[in-house]
Image (cartoon, rainbow, N blue to C red; front, side, top):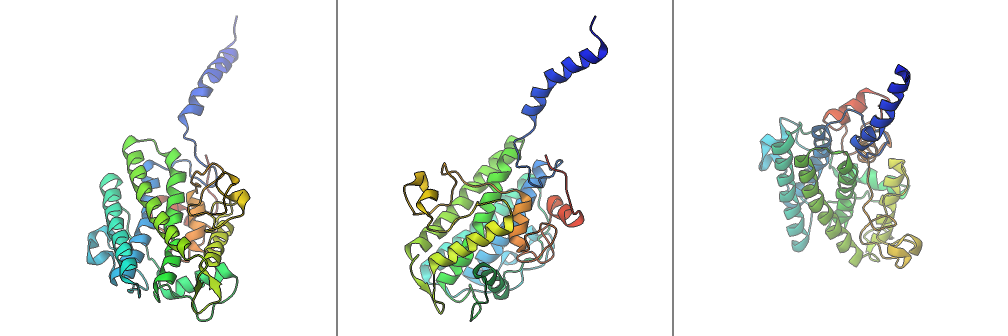
Length: 311
């Protein structure tokens, strides 16, 4: 006669595959166990706020508050908002990007509810610090993205791609069709913005950025190296040219779109994203674009806890 413990073992073995199927295939690196779809999409809203402010300010000299102030939910205006010295075509593209980001915020707020806009630093000084870290020394004069179109596009290189990685990493974690649909739609446009910027820079990859003796290509490689270093999770970021062994099908050194061995987009977890956008390499230590930390449950819990449970 079977014993109770034997019945328990049989039931456990039967249910284990179901349990494995039910758990979403999430990256393990610092991903919170109890994050809901709402938590994850609201985490991404931090990056959408950053992009909205940077694009609108760069193109028009005004930010989100001039268009949809209620989206900020009382959060402070960005630090360092100013119009960039852009040529006509670049300004038109960046202005469109800014309007797209307003739409993204509206879609997030409508679908899952919004978070308060966190303090965001898009000042020339913050970008100067970022590019100094990337190059490993202090640029002279300090890098100013608002000075001309090329410098601004290099600064753009530093932002949308991180959000793209975050959406790719979030995708397998979502459970509800409505949030999955929203993420797919957001990811499509984020990917497009990154592709436009990278293609534009690729055309002038060998051009030296004034007044530095540094090419556009070298700047992109430096930013990508820095993000890999801060993320602490290997190579998930590449410049506009790569060794042939890292190129698509190991047949090209061209790298207009950054992707893995199978030309698939790299994923990043919230912890990786925070390490990069904070510029500290530590999801518990704010700085960089978010001097007081990002908002939403996931980001705020990282600020309150040294360690978090993972899936």
